[in-house]
Image 1: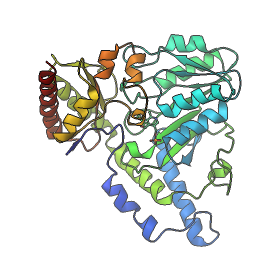
Image 2: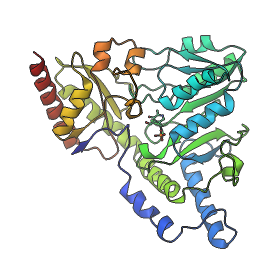
Image 3: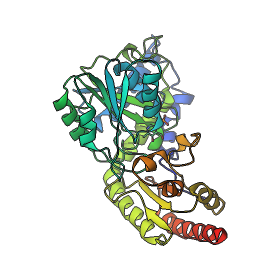
Image 4: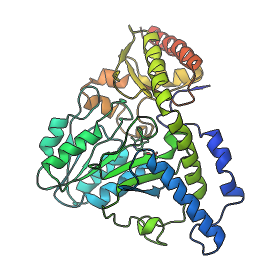
Length: 376
Ligand code: PLP
């Protein structure tokens, strides 16, 4: 089976898994325990924290809080700081951000404002800035769009947002960017969410990176772990495996970036362009190619490809429970329903091989041709 749905999740890094095993078998101690084995675990966590943070941020200016997933990191950021006036986000956000924003309104906390997208999936920066006024408390703009692959220049956007209102707290969902896009956090970004399972880590491990001087209220209250900001006994195995996977992923980040651009373009050039239309643009992440088989149903093609030995996605895996059959993000980019219905997302990882790309071309062209023929 060829797996090209890596934006949904990646296969855990075997090397990182092997290295982390001892945190289940031998070093299983509670990091809060008062004996030396507990202290040793605490210092291992400190090292993991530093590995993960130093890859994208200056450790003297930022710190990292472990969470259970990217969704928790997004929720913690939003519900901690979108407290008054209005809060601004984009129409391209993952449900981990868009659903909490809807909840701000339901709970009467503050007024959510949604900035529109450009055709390629990036936020329209001018329209985002137009929504910001003196009452804006919080702004959230995703770094890499999980459906369209579009990259927002969040450092630049954060600067512009703070020029307009310096009191705004700026957050970015970096789940699809961390370990994939060459990037370092600018001081204007206050909060940044990451998730382990998108880069060879395990599901159920994430982190919220924050500017050190920003006071983050406790989100889960209990034993006072994570300096009181996120109580709960740490997932030591998951955290160590995340740090090892990140070490591994950042080592090949630049090489992966170049190689996957080539694979993505090979895949696109190999697809029958009388059937497929390209949705994601060339300047988006190399990890995602989004196309539409306009007039065909993406979901049916997904199942046919699955039967033929290829796993791909139709958009966000997390929106598969959504009521609408159309890609919400494709519609927000201005595509019509017919195009949005045919969306397929093909996403790569560090482990993706050229032969898999060539086979995927064959399978996708084959199933699309079959379905088109059947529909005549
Ligand atoms: N944000 C983005 C952009 C994502 O792609 C995802 C997962 O698909 C999430 C947040 C949620 O992350 P997690 O699965 O770790 O909760």
